Length: 255
Image (tube, rainbow, N blue to C red; front, side):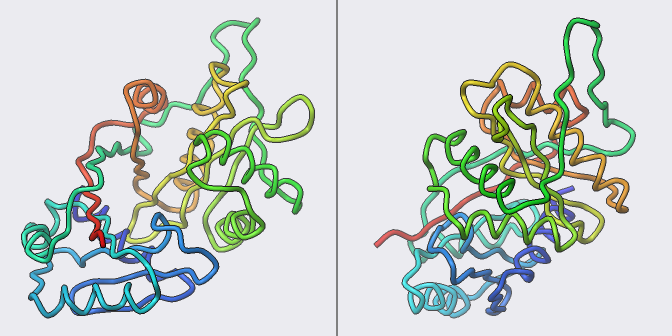
């Protein structure tokens, strides 16, 4: 699965508003934000970068005033990590990822008539996208600020072959949401699963995850993968059919 995930990472970065191929790397940039979580690079599967490739990659980030940063499945390109560490890159994080296939997907269903399964909706208005962006900012404790650009990125995902789904709060705002990139090389990445603190514990994360996964299978994906941040979220994803897949490594160059 590492090769599929890494191949997807390459294809997905090539969709960025500005994509640059540098030796055996692909860097994806979005001029609307300086966020390192959006502006980063990844190697092609099996890459064997030279020191010159790494230097050119670093320069591509420096020219744009961005921190050099990569996300990749190390087992899909074992020669990459040593080359980056020689240049001074250090570990930002190591994330495990889970994979769901059509045979393992379990759609939420009320096991108890008194327990309601959250209704999952597709955003259709600017107000919906703005509310989703704001809810995700709150869900992730301000790791990113909500903004018109963030709402626009969510709309682009929905309109360009991916999907965004959310659960509406009683007052009409967003209680929780997630998005899924358009399928590529047979797989798709589900990301940004977040629930506002006041609405946690009501099955929202499981419902939007299952709904998005089902949409991607209907569009021809053979698998969907996601990263998780802790044991609590892992259990949520496993309940809807996600299983251990591998690890992804995040490396950055400080200074």
